[in-house]
Structures are given as structure tokens and as C-alpha cells.
Image 1 (cartoon, rainbow, N blue to C red):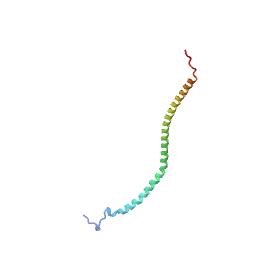
Image 2: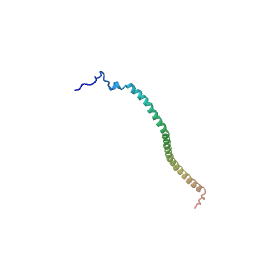
Image 3: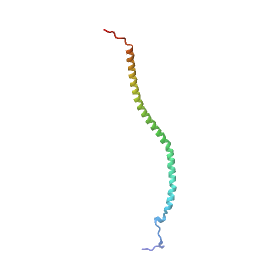
Length: 103
């Protein structure tokens, strides 16, 4: 075996001693606001699209609900009008009916 050309150091650094955890947390703190800023920017750009889509869905839902209710009201009012017209015609015919002659 060959002997080393220079003497081995008395102290061999380990990974935990080379990488300072304090420097990592300060780097993480610097990166986090940039990510949050990016998220806020994207969200502010998407928000108007979301609001428009929400409004469209709301209007569609209202139209759908109103259309169903409108059909129900229309059918009910049509029936009421038919009954009133029928009753009015029958009443008018009864009033103008010639008296029956006794046999």
C-alpha cells in the first residue's frame, strides 16, 4: 500500500457541518414570498374569468328555474281563464234564454 502524500486532516467535515441549516431557512424565506407573489398574480388574472363564469352559471340557473315556474304559472292561469270563459258563456246563455213555455 502506498502512503498518502500529505497527512490526513485531523478533522473531517460532515454534511451537517458543511451545510449551515440557518442559511437554508433564510433562503427558503426569500423564495416563499416570490412564490406567494406569483400565486397572487395568477389568481388576480384568473379571478375575472371565474367571476364571469360564475355569473353565467347563475343566469343559466335562474333562467332554468324561472322557465319551469313560468310554464307552471302559464298552465294554471290558462286553466283559470278557460274555466272563467266557460262559466261566463254559460251564465250569459242562461240569462238570454227564452222562458220555457208550459205544456
